[in-house]
Amino acid sequence: LQSPFVKESFNQSKMDGFWYELAMKDCTQPRMCSCQTSNKQNDGDTLHDEFSLECAGDTYFANLTFALQPTPGVLHATWNSIIPLVDRIIWPNMVVDVEEDDEGNYEWMIEFQCIQGRSFFGVEWIAFYA
Image (cartoon, rainbow, N blue to C red; front, side, top):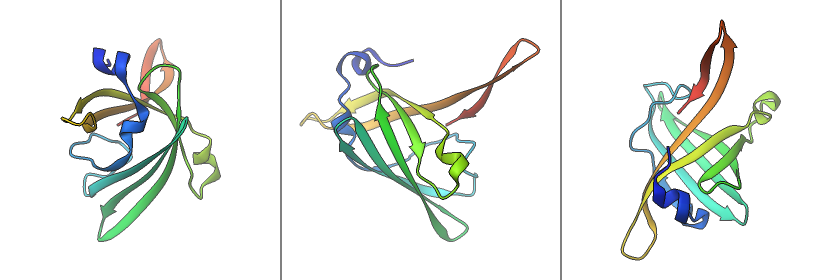
């Protein structure tokens, strides 16, 4: 699923910065929401993400923490919410591809999240994707 560049050369520190979500297919974000942004700050093996989106005239925030995994471009997120049960869910995140600008910074990035669901009658279901 990952590009060869990400598999071989991914650098988490280049995820730092303010990002706009330009396209999404996300079961956690209603279609009426817009203006999704992500302010990512690298802290060693941890990436802090202040995610926000606008829905029904209000802005909502999600404070996420991503832990770097041994595989380049793979991070596991936890949502630091006020709902204790949600804090226990690990949200796998994979960087699929990136493009570097002339200075070597990431200009754009494609990320993918998916949680494998339970198996029913021998069929595997996806519980979450984004």
